[in-house]
Length: 136
Image (tube, rainbow, N blue to C red):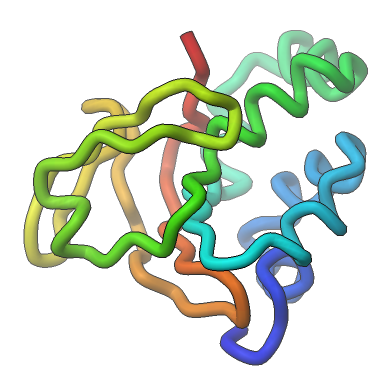
């Protein structure tokens, strides 16, 4: 994943196929691939599966809402695990996310667990999370 920009790298990870489809649906592939030094909190397919199908289908059909949710998962700087220990960060959606934890155990907004952290891509640090984050 380290050689590719973030959206391309995600497309090569089968556990992120729902996220990749959502990013494509929202027209954010180029935005994410061309961004410099970002952090992406990437929900797994299982994270999307927690959302009732009717609700997920509704969001996928609403580009504005989908874009708002997806950009809420992106922070405009590369975050290290140390920064996640007790952090608050503005997202590209302009909302705030909070992070807590240490070692191998981190949470985002007290509800989403980081299942795989600090994955490097050409332009981003990626933290794979088990729950889709919802902006306020």
